[in-house]
Image (cartoon, rainbow, N blue to C red; front, top):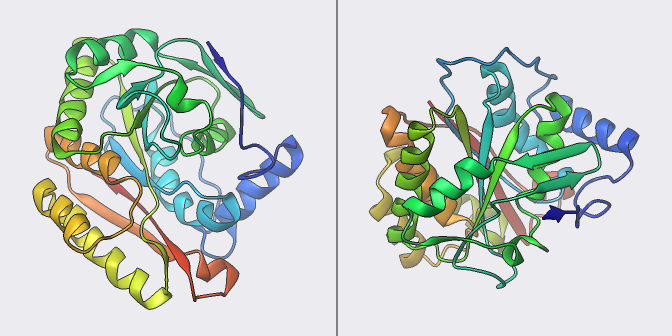
Amino acid sequence: MIREATVAGMFYESNLKYLRQSIEESFKKGLGVGYIPELSLVNPNKKVNSIMVPHAGYVYSLPVASHAYCKLVEDGFPETFVIICPNHTGFGANVSVFNEGSWIVPNGKCDIDSELANLIISKSNYASADYLAHQREHSIEVQLPVLKYFESDFKIVPICMMDQSIEASIDLANSIYEASQELNRNITLIASTDLSHFKSQEITLKQDNLLLNEVKSGNIDSFYQTVKNNQITICGYGPTMVAMEYSKNFNQNFELLKHATSGDSTLDYRSVVGYASGIWK
């Protein structure tokens, strides 16, 4: 199965020259990390095993995401990225694993690590092979041109979560860890999520900080209850919980690197979306 780019020209530039320029500007200017990092050689003792990044249009969220990607690049790329996102479309399986083929983006092709994908499915009580959930979903696709900017030689396992329950999240985290260990696969988990949606800047920052404090705590139950009890409109709370649970296998804690909102780009603070990037190390 070949999955063509569906949001090129909307969420990010489809023209290669302008795509490269937009990535570089997002890293170097404004809210970005301030420079273009150099990719380290593959590091078998890498410290960064999971990251959190947002998934909006590059002009809004990539400067924030650049902080986590910078740490990832400097730590060294793995063999395979397991990229987990929420389901925005309502199509497909409850936990959808794209398990065969390739994804095409303007600056390259990302082949699926089918061996790892199928082993994750076999170990999970929730995940299944499915393509429909991924066909119009933007929140994994937008990560790929950034990864391709730094390196062409890696594989991916895209996973889209409609079921974002605690049970599904723990199951998926355990399945990913067990499968990668069994195959001796060097992987990095990418949790793709935006935070609070369409509130004022003041409310967004307050709710986002509640969320981020719970991510730092590592307590999945408390994180989930904070989302539900405060009606916080984070879209990828499932992928976040997967990363929280997965990181426990390495005794890692979350480090917040950058937190901002769409209002910091548009200067319109009446209705904003929150973005954060960080790493577990």
